[in-house]
Length: 170
Ligand code: NI
Image (cartoon, rainbow, N blue to C red; front, top):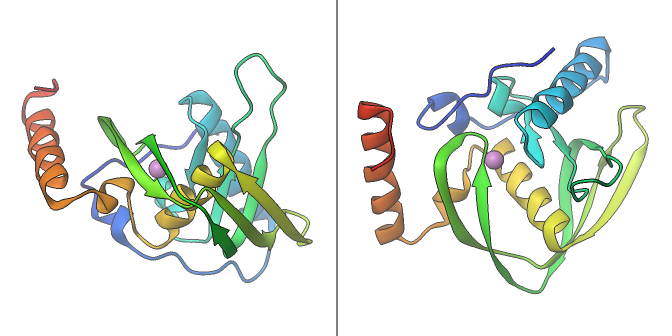
């Protein structure tokens, strides 16, 4: 089932998510719905708080268009190692009509559980590394715009207010 994606400035997006304690049917259903919602959007990643569920679950698929899907479901993901720098443009399904370059690590190692409860280690670089960092941020109540310089953030907030008032971007 496709769920509604909450958008900035919904305060639910600022809340920290709690670890999943038991991977039960509701967690499996959540992950299934999140993947469906991400693919329908379409997007390359989604975190549970974006659909109003404050549990540490993320889904990612950075497979290029035209290639078979490569869905990652990560439960309680933790970045255990990071190195290098990147500065790439990001958007977010919860931040409408706005994209900006964000400083991230170029490579990360992420540990977490899959839907079967098995420990997984994901070694990520490029777009996948950015997606992990972006989605794990959501679990901490952070959006990519929280990484912008004060000036850029101000410009973003002005745009967002305008968009909220008029329904069209300035
Ligand atoms: Ni996002």
